[in-house]
Length: 224
Ligand code: DC
Image (tube, rainbow, N blue to C red; front, top):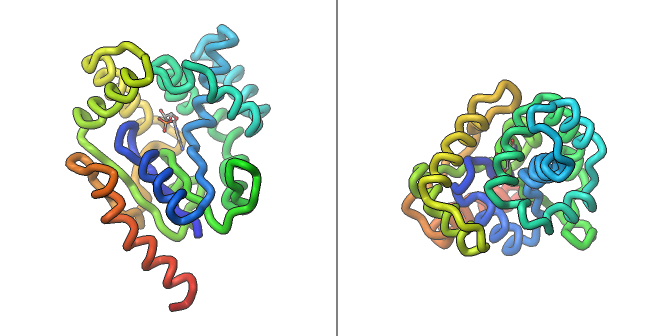
């Protein structure tokens, strides 16, 4: 079973995906990590974020172990890392270089320790539209920009990154604009995606809506 969860930053899709992966014992692929890894490597190399060819060459060489190592860096999820990821993810050459790696995960899903899993949950921006159009269940998670900025600001401050709400709000608005208006694989729901608005939801509320959809799909797949 393959589930895709797409949506803008701060919509709650990552938290939802991780909770579902745990509950249903499925492998989890946070696809934003591939763009964060390339963006952060550009920053660490002192490269201009406008250099699409350099970003594409880093993307072509990116491996899972390198991505995991970069994810330990303090800027992997900081505003600097988020901005760099959003910029490099708009480059068609970068997306093309990272496509196979992301598609292949659905063929052989594995847990973090490398052991095989019977299914995978993807989280990202184009996982239901481009990476896994064949997914069994597609979710598109949204929330008001103000709510998303509040959540992200709280998470960043809790992680020790001092940043104001206004700054997070403006950065998120710019990221939404880049993610939704880029030429390749823009953020949008797949035609068959179920839209979940988490603006007034806690995690438990989202799970209460989504789990019956998964249970129904699992029953269908097992022929019940
Ligand atoms: O989900 P995230 O915030 O970690 O994603 C970081 C950036 O990567 C985001 O600005 C858009 C990009 N991204 C993408 O273009 N396609 C994906 N499938 C996942 C993320």
